[in-house]
Length: 133
Image (tube, one colour):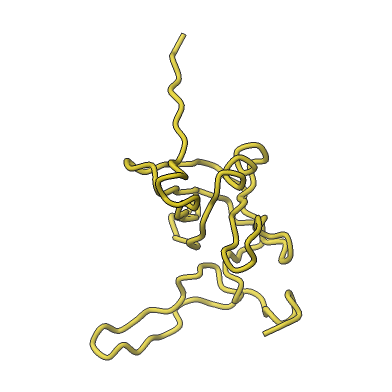
């Protein structure tokens, strides 16, 4: 029988919130950065769906609760210091970004002049999905 070790993020070390990256499990595309607290991490483990902590709303944010673009968690990685989490997810609905793009990282910056270009295709109109913007 193989012995299993357990590990958890160090929420106390990070002031209660741990930086979390969501990455597409199939393509490797970095989808978004968010934060997890202990409650959101526990719910993610229990449900297999990504749950974050919204700093602006000061409450749990169940990814896709408004848009339907949920994230099914395929793998969870915790870094060596236990203060960062990497979720490899299946992005349902094609978009992780609340601005309608696949990835929140859709602006590519030119370091020469700090200009940027949009490098992603908008998948949905945020005004139609969220009724604002």
